[in-house]
Length: 327
Ligand SMILES: [Zn+2]
Ligand SMILES: [Zn+2]
Image 1 (cartoon, rainbow, N blue to C red):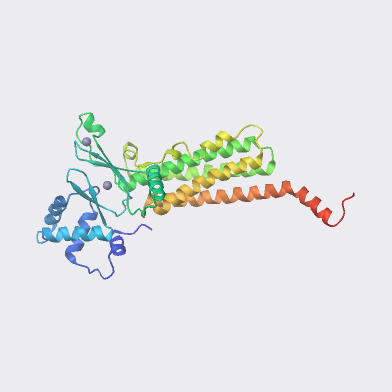
Image 2 (image 1 turned 30 degrees about the vertical axis):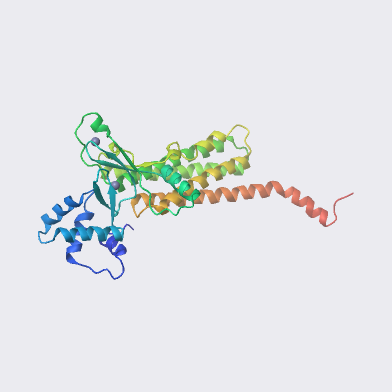
């Protein structure tokens, strides 16, 4: 379950950290801000709520929130710092417009993998990586006024997680449908057929969830992409489908399926586990579980099929060992 705001703060509160009424007011206001806020803007908001809270207390609380992991401090360049909270706010990188001063969030698993690879190669124990892209946003380039603040990042994250899972299901369905058509072996064909049907069911469920999100958040599809992952755009099974050719051996087809399912399972599991508690995280992990089941099924079938084709060889060995073979 996604924790409430209070549970979120309680989880992060340092041991022995005392509760204070003023601090709770400041934290409460801060957590209600959807985007990035300057320290001065936070002071104004808090003072509107309770004029007795001093600027020094607000600054101290901001620092306390940073230390506790409730707030993140973002350098927007030119000596400007903004603060954003971590509650239901997946980690992300920033595109920062130097004209309208707005920031736009995104996350890319490709960028993260490269960063990790570099750190690992240099034997660097990385604690945090920050990617900021400075420039001019689309609206400023066109001379348009700044757009209204968009939907919160965790909603866009959930939307994009669903889009990725849907693209993967579609490519999976295509793969299994094609594999079933090309296989002659009755048992392998049944397995591929079963998996194609399951992908259909999963796809149906994911699409209903997507439609529900669209109903909840009008304009959802007009919002820019948050989550970027090159491999997921065409679906993680696309490369496997290309390998399915006429006259394909079923064991080979199973192996390609296993490779695709494993790739998909590992991707959704690895990223799902690392995301902060959110709807997108749950979509990733639930999807990973389903891919795991397919992977297990394919692995069992591959083992059974290999055993079946090897049996004659074993029978010969056994006969030999009991001296039945004729010289
Ligand atoms: Zn701009
Ligand atoms: Zn941000």
